Amino acid sequence: MAAFAAFAKNDLIDQMPTAFVPKAGVQRWTCSVCGSPLGAAFDYLPDHIYLPLGIIDQADALSPVLHSHHAERLPWLHLSDDLPRLDGTARSELKASTK
View 1 (tube, rainbow, N blue to C red):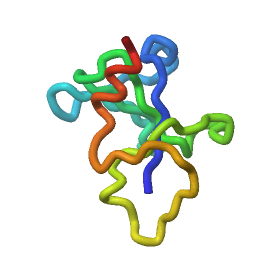
View 2 (cartoon, rainbow, N blue to C red):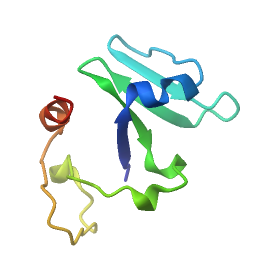
View 3 (cartoon, rainbow, N blue to C red):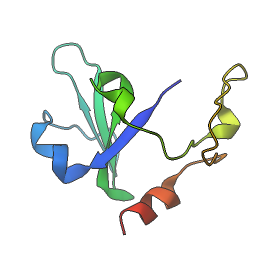
């Protein structure tokens, strides 16, 4: 299961190593030592950068606002909150949050 946190791209971009572009419209950052993923940015959400929660020291302080790809969840995963659950991507909600 993967979980990511979205941040304003301008708040983090100067702290990231050099990005690589695996395909048009996507930037990815990885650790230069071990290759672990550090972040990703997508042209369709130009003001965001996404970091895996596992690399954030204070991840417990970040409260989720929704769950995306709910239809693809693992059958044993049960979340007890009342947050919105989207069967697919949260792209439109993320775009709206930057306006």
